Length: 98
Image (cartoon, rainbow, N blue to C red):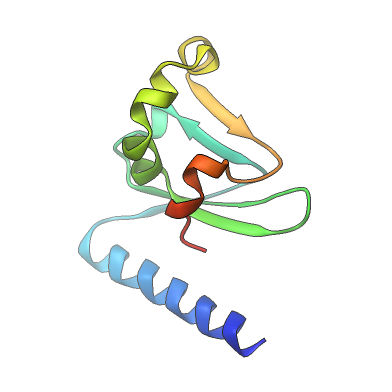
């Protein structure tokens, strides 16, 4: 419980620092999403998955780290987005903020 509180404080502090250095927009969704329309907008996305776990990540950091992967996906070419409603994809878990 104490660790959870400390992690929440660290997360909030990280968001505070990011907001002071650059403008950060926050977006709340029900699923993990990478959208072409959000690229370059420095958006931090927070979503709640089906297990009620809250996860946050920086859209641009995830996209840049896995740009080649997203650009090669048929759904990204056709719908200009990639989503996952169950969890943050394994390839992006190391980039989550919370």
